[in-house]
Image (cartoon, rainbow, N blue to C red; front, side, top):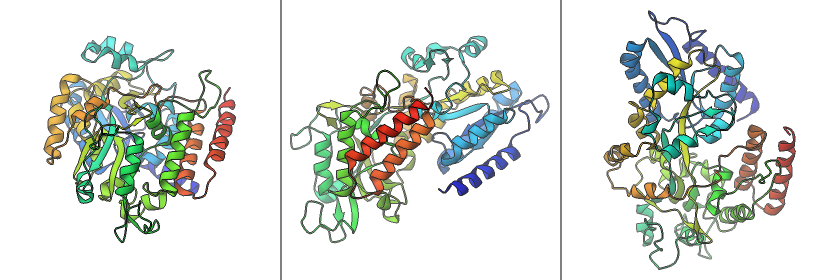
Length: 457
């Protein structure tokens, strides 16, 4: 998106928000009612099915709890690619800042570090029981110096989605569905094995797979593997948890296991051709940016939230492959947060507890997130089974929670937004540019990140 078009999009979004939201949040919209605005866009929530679910939740709240408590909930939907800039502008105006932001994960929240309300006093004042959640998940949202800036809502384990039909057509056994189980040939289920299978599952227009000397890389009609909606740090975590910053918190570094991943990725795209480059990803062949849903990709590593967008593909789940004998399954955890700029934090907390309480199963079904409350998971999975009637082994997702990345691939960095944009440019370079010196580009990235970190030291 060009800078000019992006600015125009933000201006339009702000104009729409101004039309939706009263000039101040304590404006009376009905007798004795207070407006609470819910901003959606920093994370998931923008797909048609999700929008419908969110609108239904707003209507239900306003007819029930809102009518009783004197609260009018207003939904503000902003496209993800302009959500950061739009929210930044709204916060700067103060009286137009939304009350609640979410669903949002660690990465989206990092961009607004220091702007979130400590909800511990709000919970105490409301008599809200934090004991309904596992203590570790509550502690996950406690940040030193900031307090309890979120409440547990949804967890999104990651694993391998695979297309049964494409495996069947190739005559290949499915990937394993239990951690520690080898592939059907007895070999370890590793990223090397993924590469091996992906070559056989990548086909050109003449039916040649990517191992054939006659294979045509300029006319591919099916790919063996894709990284579904993934960023550079998350992908690298497949080869082990790490980060672009040293333990001292100020020095940029390239972990060797991540360097090895980027070499593997680049080789898979441009030399072995079993991973689509950006031109293929954005083509009609791969559903214009949603590769796995096209039915023309055999395997995609992604999170449980992707159940929102599989478009009827006959998929199932496989466990996360290993690297050097170690499994790392990146974990996402989404919640709702209250901005410090909120003019009605108590009313916002009432809404927030409704979103993670009475409305949680409906929202999590739309977002593809597993409930933070263990007792809610059976009902959540039963709902998924009603949607995915082909039968999916959801135990894979539950088991993947045992292999989270620590440190998280979404952890904070100095000058976060600028650093994140530079890392995104590095990813785009890898996915769109043949004949790169990948090691030289990694060195340039680290040099640039150091300069970006130093700006805020």
